[in-house]
Structures are given as structure tokens and as C-alpha cells.
Image 1: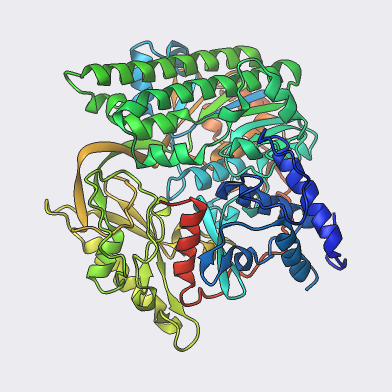
Image 2 (image 1 turned 180 degrees about the horizontal axis):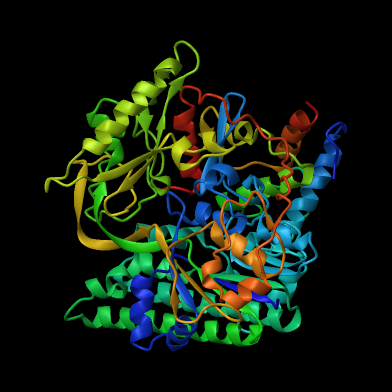
Amino acid sequence: MSESSQVYEKDAILQDLIQIIDGLIGDWEIGFSGKLGPNTLLVSDLGLESIDVVGFIVAIEEHYQRQDLPFAKLVMVDNRYVEDMSLGELADFLHRHLNK
Amino acid sequence: MGRSLFIGLDGATFTVLDALMRDETMPFLRQFAANGTRALLQSTPHPLTPPAWTSLMTGRNPGNHGIFDFMWPVYQDDRVFIKLVDSRDIRCETIWSLLSRQGRRVTALNFPVMFPARPVNGYLVSGFVSWRHLRRGTYPPEFYDTLKTLPEVNHRELGMDLDQEKKSIQGLEPEEYEAWIELHIRRERQWFEITRYLMMNEPCDLTAVLFDGTDKLQHVVWPMLNPALAPIAPSPWQRRVRDLCLAYFRDLDGYLAKLVELAGPDSQIFMASDHGFGTSEEIFYVNVFLAQHGYLQWGSSANAVDGTGRHLPQRMSIQYGLIDWSKTLAYCLAPSSNGIYIRVAHQPGQPGIATADYERFRGELIEKLLAFRAPDGGQVVTRVMTREDAFPGNETLRAPDLTLVLRDHGFVSVLNAPTVLWRRDQPVGGHHPHGIFLASGPGIRSGFSASILSIVDVASLLVHSVGLPVPSDLEGRVPVEIFTSDFCRAHPVNLGEPTQPVVAYPVSSKDSALPEDEEAAVLSRLKNLGYIE
């Protein structure tokens, strides 16, 4: 687990995310055969539903031991709920906020 | 003392169980009750699954454990994010943790608000979690692989299917009833199989399992389960549905018998529900009431009147755009908490009442709610609880400002409607504050009916049952009247050190004012996340 004073590199965050999502979808039998990477889309590629996004966020919060990450800013843009996001976008978001 | 077994029966009520014991659908439970002690169990001030089970698991009221509803808003800078409550939101130690750190082994299966799973000295599988996330709701995680291999266990059916749950609450089509009941027949068998496996292979000092189909069936088929509402001349469809319900309860009775047998004659056995069930015959449209009194202004979707004609028991419904947030001072966000939130303007220009006016405003609102009368002249809102009265503790400010008790103990509706009060075409089942408590085993009085107990007593009782001192900060008591005098002499209740504080991650401020327009965004997110219709 990471400490709060730690500096988080974007590549390391992406690897964390890949590891977390791989652990989640491994049980889902969704038949995803591609390679997880920054361009992997949560909804289109991995078939996450809204409740799965919630579960993914909980897993991320658990990993970094934080519950104060402003995910609202990620999932709401111009007061509209985003329809999809990539692991790279998520890594960018975490890189900005974990290092604040 | 020997081992202890706790069996939770979600929403179980003696109204139904007594009838099923009498007609021999549940012969084991009849014998169990006759040989032991029974009592009504007073639920939390608002009898709802997440706060009530959390009170049972912590021995604390919601004002201390911090769980008031299925969801809660997290305030982040100028934004709000709605999330389902989870185990990290419980601000008090659970008995699973308490026993584990004192060297007792614990199994806890299918209890809500346990996701993500916290380490225990034993096994924990969270309830009310989508199967896709059940591994992370399981401790140790590897046990998820084991349970998938158990006979008759379909891991995809163990978890909560949000779409199915919503459907059951919003109302099933007649042709969907049988499949719904059959699903719960299968689910209970699976939780039974997991419990049996662990009791046989990994026996623990305390084994606890929750069967939740009781609540699910009662929500959907209450008129066919409550003897007072049973149709005199049932249709063939009603007979089929009723027969399936009886099959469910017969199976459940068999599981109770087998689990008690597995626990062995030296074990104390406890059963309890988080709340009871009663008959709801009307719908109180709380936001319509608030609008009529000028506290709430309907918004651009004001035409979204609840005109479906179904008038369902607890529609988890508020629609984005339904309310004009710039002109609204008080509102009910979701019916599950029966709560009214009062908007307080923390800065000039924000919508809401001035901080200094809060007490007067709230008092006026309470008076008007209590004064509301039905066309029959009856008082509809029988009690209005302020958050500090209903939920005293460190987490009081998370609670709604007001919590309503209706004369039929029903849930409010948050939708727009032509009238404040609507009489349902057909009565439905709703939560009631009186759940059940049953106990049997060594040292427990036989054939005894105790006075009503509190749901927070159960934690103290279970801790005492496994031979540990009862933490001094638990809010309940060990109901010693259920024990024989010999047992009480041999096993006096010892008070011990308080529970340990829960280590929380950094969270955003919960005291922030809800910024203008953000409440609307909250509703939008809820809708998009699928939590509400």
C-alpha cells in the first residue's frame, strides 16, 4: 500500500489500475482477450456497468487507502455523466489528485 | 460456554411466522420457539435494512455507526458524489472484529454493508453485493474460489442483482412472481450450503448467516403471506404463488433444523430479524406536502406525476428536473430513509434558510406535518423525529434533518402526485419496527416470552454468549431474563474495555454546504448509477 507522502508516477498508477481491473474482471467470464492498456475503455471494452464502476472505484480507494479522491469530477463533465472512460484517463485523473 | 449460532431472517415477522408454525409449514421453528425464548425486537428508529443490521452487528445506534440508508452523499470541494454505503462507512467496530481480535473464530455470511470485506479470524462473505464483486466481499478472498465449487452453489445467484431488486420493489408483473420466488428458494439453499460447509469443515465460535428471501418475498407477496389479507377465494395464480411461498418457507425451516443440528446440543442458538413487516394501505407524497406548504418548488419535470396507477410501496424514485432547487427549502431525496432534508444557506445568496432560523423553521415544519389529516380525519404522520433525538452520537449530522413515522409505518413517496395522500388499490407489505427474536439452547429459558428487546441488545448478547466481556460502550444490554437463573449465576455478565476505534481513510468534509445546483447533479448521478429509477 502507498503512503500519503509518496509521489505517484503516472505509469505506476496505470499499472496499479491494470492490476486492479484485471483482478476484477478475472471473475467475470466476459471473454475479453485484448491487452489491458491506457486505451482500454471501461464500458465499451470491458463491459462495466454502473455498479461495476462503483466497485472499481471502491477498489481504487482501497488500494490507495483514500476516500477523498474527487471522482465526481471524473464521472461528471459539464453536469453530464460521462458515457465511458479509458484506463489512461483514469490514470491521468489519479496522477493529478494523488499527488496534490 | 459452547459455540454460538446466529441466524438472521431479514424482515421476518411473527405475523407471518406464527401462522406458518401453526399450519406446520415450519414445524422445526415451532418446536424451536416452544423449547426456547421469544420476543419482539425493536428495530432502529427508521426500520431499514442497512442501519438496522449495522446496529445489530455493532450494538450501536445509527447516530454512532453512521449508516442511515443505502446510500450517502460524499461532499468533495464544490461537488457531491453519491455512493452506496459500504463497510468503510461504518464508524464503529463490528462484533466480527471484536471477537476476532480476542481470539475467537467467526463466520459471518450475507450481512449487508460488509463490502469490501474486512479481515476476520475466520470467514466473511458480504451480502447485498453484485456477484461480480463478491470476491472482494469475501475474506479470505481465496474462499470465493472454494464456495464456487460447493455443490448447488451458483455464485452468480449469490450476489444481489440490482435490476432484479429494483424490479421487486417497484412491482413485478404477474408472470414474474414465480421466477422471483424460485430465485430466492435457490439463493437460500446456496447460503445454507456455504454455511453448512463452513460449520462442518471450519467450525467457529460464532457462526452467523443471514437469509434475506423473507424480506424479498414479503415485499412482493404480502397479501398472500399475511393471514389477515389472504384472499377468501384465491385465483389459480394466487394459489400457485402462495404454494411457492410455502415451499420457500418449508425449505427455510429445513435449513434452520439442519444448522441447529450441526451446531450441536452445547450451542446457544439465536435468531433475529432487522425489522418486521406490516400492511401499508396508503402513500404519503411528502414532496407534494412540502410543495403545498411552500417549502418545495416543482421543476421542469413537474408533469412527471405518479400516474402509473400502480402506487407501489416504496418506489426508489425522484427524477432529475422534478424539483426547482433554487426555490426549495426542504425536500425528501429518497423514500428509503423517510427523511426530510432542510437546506441551510451557509453563505449569502445560497438557497436555503438562514442558519439562525433553523430551529424555528424546523419546528414549524414538524407542526405542519403532525397536523396533516387524512380524509378520514386520522393523523397520517404520527411522529417526526429530529436527527439529534432519533440518532444521537458522533454521526448525527449525516442523518436527514427529520425522519417521519407514518401511521401505517409505510415508506413515503418522493414523486409528484395529484394529492398528498393516496389510498392504495391493494395493500402492500412494508417495514414495521417490530422484528423477531428467538433463542434456544443450554441456559436459555424454555417456553418463555420475554418483553420487547432492542436490536442493539443482540450484539451484547452474542459477545456474552461466546464468553467474552461486553464492551462498556455498547448501547444495548445482555437480556439476562432469557437465561435460567442457574446459567446467570454460572455466567455473570462482565463489562469489558470499550470497542476499538475504526481507522478511517481520509474522507472529504461532510459538513460542507450542498452548493447550488449540486443537489440536482446528485439526483442525476443517482439515476445514472442506477440506484434510483
